[in-house]
Length: 374
Image (cartoon, rainbow, N blue to C red):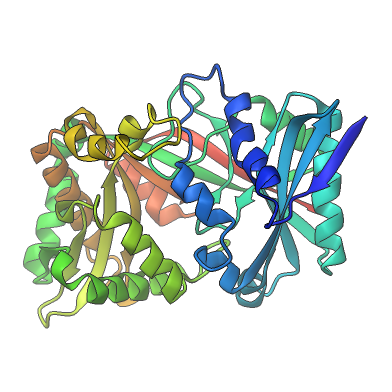
């Protein structure tokens, strides 16, 4: 007999069980990187987690014989539906033992909650939206996830598809070998063309003026991505929170801005060292001792993740993307970074996919987003 419990935000015991359950699923998985406890604490903090400005999340736990065997969250994202003109609820934070009946009850519960909110479709995994953890890993299980990317057991795909969900979008993660990219003549030629023909220059993140820099990031992201599938503009609070979380770890050399002749920013990229290589051994705990490892063990990081590359519409097809990638690779090589991941890229984003393939990138991980009518 499967019992479902609704997680009340004031119930510390249930919240702890919700947060700790993945440790049971991934106990023997050498590739899993546990989310940091400090980040999980914010998830259930209505004042600190920016998503609650415009959304609602209801978490559920599944029990069998008094033991937790699964979890899920049902999500109402008002901002998504307003901007995308959709009528869709979401499920996220899905973790489950390999039993279809348990998964079915979890999906039934999320679907019922979403339906009661007035939606006609349910989509996921979105934990809790495309601006956070998004999509289900379906290829690339032999490697740990890069920074801020999702990971799950292979059998989750069967649990989701057997329930009746259908794929609605694919997401790609590209692997780029810095040595090969440096040797790509086409990339260097396009980058030089952008510098000479259009008079672009490159500058890097100014941490002393981080507030102004964040405003630029918001402008570029919201403009460059507005026509993309599932796009939700960052709120000021979301960007401020992200900047606060990353500012101690961000490497300015990996955040280039392309500037035109008049000093206007044309595009930018954001790459981060893959701190998962360090935090993988933390088991979710940062304090009191692991915090120092983030700064003393950087030399073991061999990957960077290119999280964002955005170009304002009026500057597209002028080599800005090549200039940004070329700059990132140069900086990464100076930092002894061997490989980069560009993720995630929509499968139907022809321009980005073509550009990454031209630079020798290969799709080495794939993710899927699922949907069904209610």
